[in-house]
Image (tube, rainbow, N blue to C red; front, side, top):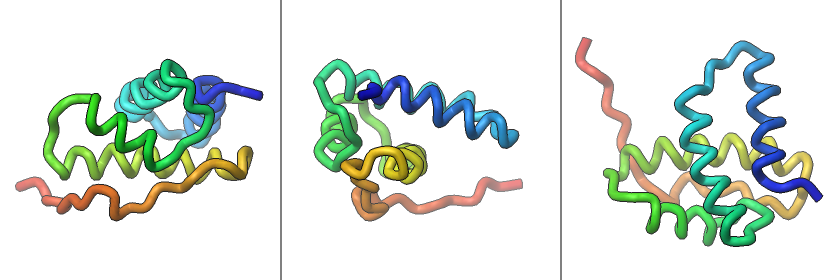
Length: 102
Protein backbone atom coordinates (compact mmCIF):
# COMPACT_ATOMS: atom_id res chain seq x y z
CA UNK A 1 0.00 0.00 0.00
CA UNK A 2 1.35 3.41 -0.96
CA UNK A 3 1.56 6.27 1.50
CA UNK A 4 -0.20 9.57 0.93
CA UNK A 5 3.21 11.12 0.18
CA UNK A 6 3.79 8.67 -2.66
CA UNK A 7 0.29 9.29 -3.99
CA UNK A 8 0.88 13.04 -3.81
CA UNK A 9 4.04 12.63 -5.90
CA UNK A 10 2.01 10.79 -8.55
CA UNK A 11 -0.76 13.40 -8.46
CA UNK A 12 1.65 16.32 -8.84
CA UNK A 13 3.54 14.60 -11.67
CA UNK A 14 0.29 14.02 -13.55
CA UNK A 15 -0.97 17.58 -13.09
CA UNK A 16 2.41 19.02 -14.08
CA UNK A 17 2.43 16.89 -17.21
CA UNK A 18 -0.79 18.70 -18.14
CA UNK A 19 0.93 22.06 -17.78
CA UNK A 20 0.02 23.17 -14.25
CA UNK A 21 2.69 24.94 -12.18
CA UNK A 22 1.46 23.86 -8.70
CA UNK A 23 4.43 25.29 -6.76
CA UNK A 24 2.20 26.89 -4.12
CA UNK A 25 -0.25 23.97 -4.06
CA UNK A 26 2.60 21.53 -3.58
CA UNK A 27 3.83 23.34 -0.45
CA UNK A 28 0.35 23.32 1.08
CA UNK A 29 -0.41 19.71 0.16
CA UNK A 30 3.00 18.49 1.41
CA UNK A 31 2.23 19.96 4.84
CA UNK A 32 -1.18 18.30 4.81
CA UNK A 33 0.24 14.93 3.76
CA UNK A 34 3.14 15.09 6.23
CA UNK A 35 0.65 15.58 9.08
CA UNK A 36 -1.31 12.59 7.77
CA UNK A 37 1.77 10.38 7.48
CA UNK A 38 3.12 11.45 10.89
CA UNK A 39 -0.18 10.59 12.58
CA UNK A 40 -0.79 7.31 10.79
CA UNK A 41 -3.61 8.40 8.49
CA UNK A 42 -3.66 6.37 5.29
CA UNK A 43 -6.66 8.02 3.67
CA UNK A 44 -8.06 11.52 3.35
CA UNK A 45 -11.00 12.10 5.67
CA UNK A 46 -12.91 14.92 7.33
CA UNK A 47 -11.29 14.30 10.76
CA UNK A 48 -7.85 14.52 9.13
CA UNK A 49 -8.64 17.84 7.48
CA UNK A 50 -10.16 19.30 10.65
CA UNK A 51 -7.13 18.16 12.67
CA UNK A 52 -4.85 19.84 10.14
CA UNK A 53 -6.93 23.01 10.26
CA UNK A 54 -6.75 23.08 14.06
CA UNK A 55 -2.97 22.53 14.17
CA UNK A 56 -1.67 24.22 11.02
CA UNK A 57 -1.88 27.79 12.21
CA UNK A 58 -4.23 30.69 12.18
CA UNK A 59 -5.72 31.97 8.94
CA UNK A 60 -9.05 33.40 7.88
CA UNK A 61 -11.84 31.33 6.37
CA UNK A 62 -11.03 32.52 2.85
CA UNK A 63 -7.54 31.04 3.12
CA UNK A 64 -8.87 27.80 4.61
CA UNK A 65 -11.50 27.58 1.92
CA UNK A 66 -8.74 27.82 -0.70
CA UNK A 67 -6.71 25.13 1.09
CA UNK A 68 -9.81 22.94 1.29
CA UNK A 69 -10.17 23.25 -2.48
CA UNK A 70 -6.61 22.04 -2.97
CA UNK A 71 -7.18 19.03 -0.71
CA UNK A 72 -10.53 18.29 -2.40
CA UNK A 73 -8.93 18.20 -5.87
CA UNK A 74 -6.28 15.81 -4.56
CA UNK A 75 -9.00 13.70 -2.88
CA UNK A 76 -11.03 13.51 -6.12
CA UNK A 77 -7.99 12.12 -7.89
CA UNK A 78 -7.08 9.81 -5.02
CA UNK A 79 -10.61 8.39 -4.80
CA UNK A 80 -10.06 6.81 -8.21
CA UNK A 81 -7.13 4.83 -6.79
CA UNK A 82 -8.41 4.14 -3.27
CA UNK A 83 -12.15 3.85 -2.72
CA UNK A 84 -11.75 4.47 1.02
CA UNK A 85 -10.86 8.09 0.30
CA UNK A 86 -13.44 10.61 1.42
CA UNK A 87 -14.02 13.56 -0.90
CA UNK A 88 -14.46 16.37 1.57
CA UNK A 89 -17.52 18.58 1.55
CA UNK A 90 -16.94 22.07 0.26
CA UNK A 91 -19.08 23.25 3.18
CA UNK A 92 -16.44 22.37 5.81
CA UNK A 93 -15.07 25.89 5.55
CA UNK A 94 -17.16 28.71 4.18
CA UNK A 95 -15.07 31.36 2.51
CA UNK A 96 -16.08 34.20 0.30
CA UNK A 97 -14.19 34.85 -2.89
CA UNK A 98 -13.07 38.44 -3.12
CA UNK A 99 -12.01 39.73 -6.49
CA UNK A 100 -8.79 41.69 -6.33
CA UNK A 101 -8.90 45.30 -7.35
CA UNK A 102 -7.30 45.69 -10.78
